[in-house]
Length: 130
Image (cartoon, rainbow, N blue to C red; front, side, top):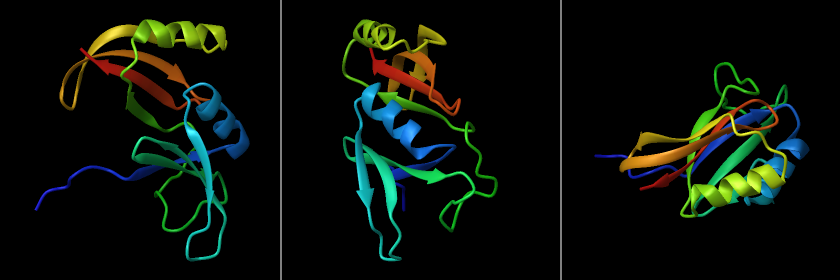
């Protein structure tokens, strides 16, 4: 048996509205409000066949991480657009690029990456396979 991929991951955030604004405006993700079988209302960010579920700090849904904390995330998102286009977009939006473009190694080979931070300080890597 092998794991084939991932469906979603969870970010614990200080403010869901701030996170939705950042990920939709800056990264072009789509916000989704959904209602699971437990009757709660939840928020996710969709991109391609994946999503990021958002948990409000202090009001996380169970089961949850052992120590859910805003700003503890560090993840890489793959783009097909040139990183120069991302640099221009981020500059237009006033989003600081912490590092990059720099060469890295992704799951399938060599990538070039930009690093930035979301409103909670999570490290977001935008990468393109070369």
